[in-house]
Length: 254
Image 1 (tube, one colour):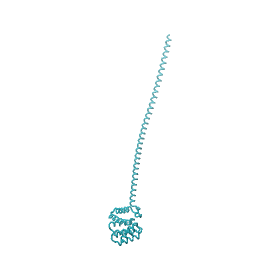
Image 2: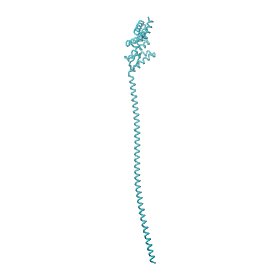
Image 3: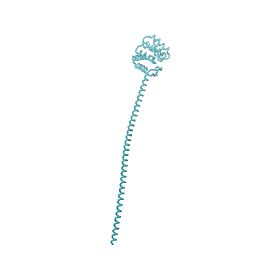
């Protein structure tokens, strides 16, 4: 009976000791597993922390690069705007220069035209005359047509002195003689009408010049000279209107 109880006690102790050992073994394994897990987690945390730091550094570097690129873009935009402004300014300068050159060229052309001879036709005759010469002749003739005979006489006299070889000369002599006739300078008129006839006996105004000489002689009470002049007119220019007027005056003088 005692041996049985002892055996049972030993068996129970054995079971308790084995169970304790088993439990102790299981706790060590669990701790090692936990420690290994913690180490892996820490290692992963450290790895993620390094990766996050590198990522943050890379992001910061990228942001700096983007900022530098943006600054470069803004600088290029500013330079492009400046160049465009320079181009526009240069274009305006070129346009202004071209306009000034055009104005200068036109001014030169206009000044040259003031001195270039022009073709004119007076009393059926065409010739070249300087613009100033044309202007002076037309001014003298305008004075005559307005009845300003003293001014016309002075203007034609000055014209003939200023342009002695002018194509206007025969016509200027004719109108000068008429201005003198209007001013009762009959002898002066006769001299200029004769100068016209001597220079251009075939001039379209020649018959009128001869008739005007006769009129001056009549005013001077020189009827004999007037008759001879009228006879010469009829013989020299028989088909002219002046010849018809000369025949009528001859009939009155005889």
